[in-house]
Length: 157
Image (cartoon, rainbow, N blue to C red; front, side, top):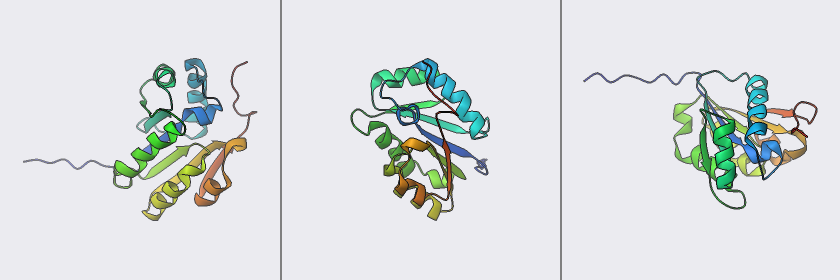
């Protein structure tokens, strides 16, 4: 039996809380598509990166699917639904064995523990968040933090 070894070297996982990144609970596909272009360039995302876009409503899930084609879209309903959906992935999908780098695209403090845990397991972790929405707890937990402002990216008027 020939078992192929999957090369996980330099693989990246991007866990994106789209509502947090856009600063609104009612996202639109056009804004997500604009953010996608900005995000990919700002983070120098390789073509083979695994992108997960999370939301807290089924409508936002649908908008995410149209706005970020090719991404895995997940959702859990209610308050912090997107956060909880992304944390399920971070904790339950053997991320430390599958990826060398994880980017949390959110400023929510709820990701601080997961960021620390992954770093302690040898995974490079980055936080990418809008400066006005980033938690001090999350910033202190992560060795690599990249912040952007409304000048860098803002919603269409």
